[in-house]
Length: 258
Image (tube, rainbow, N blue to C red; front, side, top):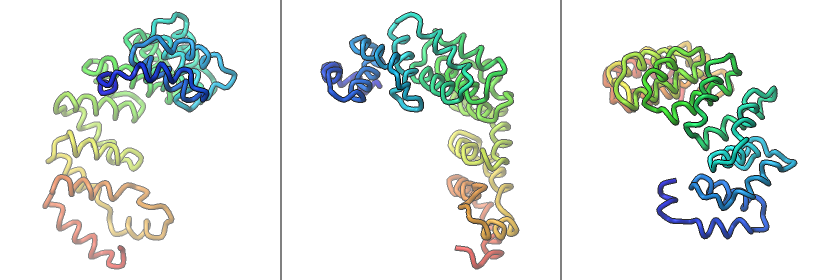
């Protein structure tokens, strides 16, 4: 966005508001809103009131509402807040993503209430994501996220804290997540880039597959279902020589594998 501002594209985008293609007009209006330019306001209103809400796309009704709110148009934040509690997951997530795209301090109370209450997990994650977008160094918020019931929120909080500086609690959280195949890839990637290399190597070595694991995987039809290659790649990034004997033994135990 900063690079775009330096290019001063407003004349081109303003001209695009008159394009015959509705998607060209929509993108132009949304980008202008991100730049703080009100020129696309009328196009955004048409998007917000269109019979096709275009849920799940970046030119949806909720993106238009979030853009209008960012431009100071009243009434749209309340509609977005209501959408976060909608019974349809597509509506909830679309509103959450739109709000995150146009994150601003005025959304704090809504996001915080959504995160704190017993909301569906999909919007709770995006609410926390939005909170970190506007308070990315709020240690109290991030530490609360570290003990959240949702793994995705714990992961996000740990990533933000480690971006600030080395943090033992965050490492503990990520190391526990790395033991779960569903979170192994993201957790190990974060540990390898912003964690403690010694601790990460120990964790990665402990997660190396056994011969029985490889035999079980070889008869399956899903490629690397438990992210074993992520474990090996992590050890490669860390240049962990202590892993060489274990890897050598692993290969020797499974000579027919490629």
